[in-house]
Image (tube, rainbow over all chains, first blue to last red; front, top):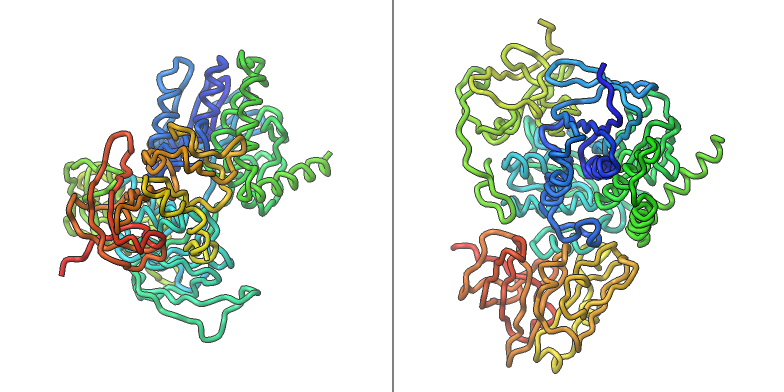
Length: 364
Length: 101
Length: 161
């Protein structure tokens, strides 16, 4: 077994920022990611980011990934394991890593989980037909491998991911005829929506997919209108030809490693599903184990970065290696995080965090 | 279908990699996963469901969902969406649970 | 309605356009109608004409008299929600962001498109700017009949017949 001062699981925006702060505080860091490259979902984002300067606003996602990676790579106290999946976590901060069909074990003084999120799915007839894709899969195919999954796509879901992936599909040369949204209003930022509509995409609120049509691959979809109670409006069925359906109906936090060791979790819908309960220092119910980013609650990458910086700072403090500017940096990133959540789009997260507070009180 | 021109991204020309799909010789590119190469070739059915024999295709692209499991060089349940393509791989559609060799 | 179909209403649009006399000089048109955490338009403006303030969720406010119409905000806005407009005789001249291929070339006639994606009119491409600083967001200078001042939104290539 190999011992490390701190281990960070997940090399997306949250994990990379946490690693940067832990390294800057003088900690020895082992950063593990299951994919062949660091950067997580940022690698697949071709659009310019929202936020302010401290979240690299107006930088394109893949450029932010490159910047966050370059901030840490080559640091003498950093070890990176790629193509490596953490398949086991134990209460004494031991992890089992699977890489190239070989298992190895590591033990840390403190661990930080930044495993991100996985996509939610939607039940409809023929949802298993080839040609029905998750939004992340389409981004991966298009933007990492340069392969276009379809020429005429129907998008299910109008959250920011659905809107962004639609725009990316058009940039890659596809046509996105329709975005259906079960809710009464568009879920994501309206600037993203407007950008698509002027390119010829129709966004249909109070509408959902009833079934995919085709024998061995998608050839069309049947869509229906929904009433106030999300029930089908009689006679509203329409058939829309397409060769691909993209399902973008939200994300679930990847809490599984933490659940494995019995860290306290709670189902909080506003945060995306089951989440570990963390305190103000992003510490789980197991004091040596921290968690940041989407695995603690679904938000934008900008918030994941701020949580990552904070998590890295608190982790270092726990290891008695506080960053020389700990207090100043903490207050700066706390303020940034507060501002990111201070608008209407932050209300859901705030409500979720309130529920987390209540759950922790009840647990005491 | 390969994306040739993109307003934001550039995809450098890569060398071709020959492999076989269902015994037929086909080509992918260096940097592909098995599934991205098949997707670029327009091959959508990668497997069949065990009980009802329904076609299965590419779905998650991150090795989570098992929809792209195929038989590669005789080994079943290979997650082709995260397995790098290599020359002369023998890639076949999987229709059963697979057998441990 | 913006919330339902992504198309801003005519009153919303009118509210972000200065009057025609003011538009003798080019001015930024900020089509940002929602409180989202974002401020690059404000921080990138070299003359501090766009105000958001401490809370980055606040909507941007344009100080029309200060705006020089330089267009830096066009490619700084991650939402591609800013254009620069000017009245020149009987023509409305726009500078709009564009991130699709193919790019037009100077002198092309493309379709002028409204905010719901419908064809409005012919649009003359007067210039195409694609500098490094713009980071792959092209800026097209386009002229259309001035009657389309409040309805023009972007351009679309005419399909080859």
